[in-house]
Image (cartoon, rainbow, N blue to C red; front, top):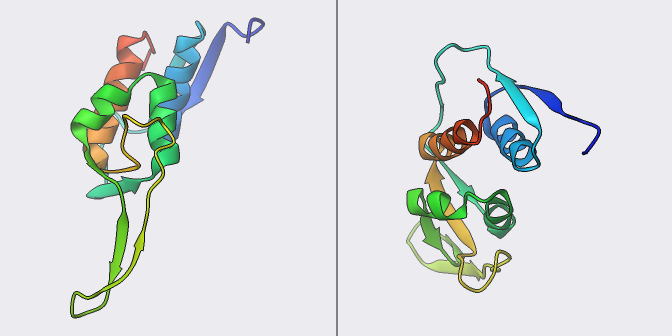
Length: 124
């Protein structure tokens, strides 16, 4: 990364914001462009498994992310009558102190990522 001093990130969604955060933490200047002048986030929520929880830790946003999320360990599948068919255990890839899975609203996720990116000096 030492040869790269400035990067243009196109798109202010989850991927673009995560890239901006990671690059800023490496000392790279980041300009982020988004086609919409006002960010709108569609969808209600998103379920993210342990690999995402681990990467949020690596990005340095885990505490804010977990504060905005609902943590849970296992996933259950039920029939129409509510009878449990199977329980899928989660894995705590971010470490024993962190949940295996989270549910988070897309708006909350976007707020955590955009606030962090901007606080780190990303030019939007």
